[in-house]
Length: 110
Image 1 (cartoon, rainbow, N blue to C red):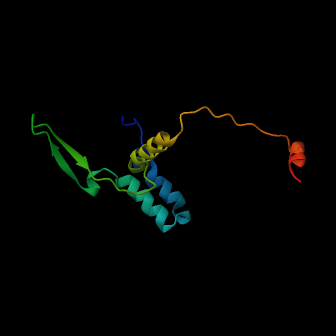
Image 2 (cartoon, rainbow, N blue to C red):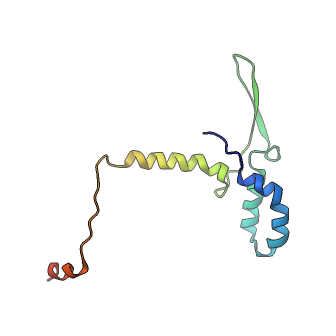
Image 3 (tube, one colour):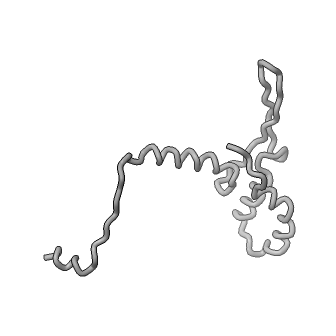
């Protein structure tokens, strides 16, 4: 999965303060909590750890995710796993839906 060029968090970092100044009165506590979680997700604000390759010694920093159910970064992988599981459950048949006119219902009922 490739990282998109622009994420919701990027927009919130640039325009979030202006948005909050204008609409804070209409925000509830949970909405404000989700807003802040999306801003901090996978940044140094939530901490992280260093990954190191034992073969070549390459190191990379992996930041902790917020795990908020409204965060697009956190829920994307879970959504893709859920969709893949539902696709595996689908039958490999063709399905054709047909409709009956309402007038023919009367002939079926007693």
